[in-house]
Image 1: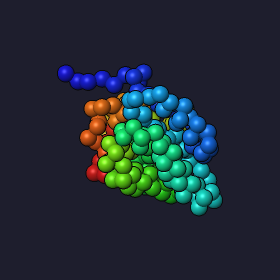
Image 2: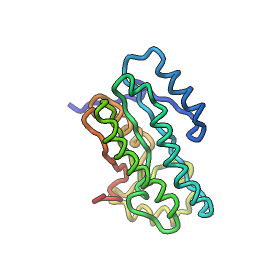
Image 3: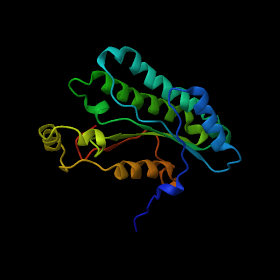
Length: 194
């Protein structure tokens, strides 16, 4: 029998990634009075112009590190889940997207370091690396570009947001209590071998 991971049973919070004070307030509000583990999810950041790369790459990774450290309640509870959303591009690279690929690859190193650092407190840290997902952004791509993308994906289709969310829900569940430092691709086979 296959377990299911309904999204409604997974506690989560959303807060601006770059606003440390607001993020800390959101974390503390969710932790107040909680005895169960709290799961943190960093917001997935989009692409930026190359001229911003020098500041955005360290900024994105630094922001995730600050948010991970802001979840002090997990340390007190001695349990929790940190789940970063990266990208298959962070594993494969992509022409014209060096800044985006570098920032997403940086999340992998950060997550694996945090996994080692926080494991003794029963806090896991993992990365979900989606490939191309059926979103408004990918819907706006020209048909020939979409066809070129799909030709590289062994499953021959885009992922759905629910498929990505299902992996996040699994990582946040008790079934993933022994999974830490992992990078889980949700990419239809595009990044096989990474």
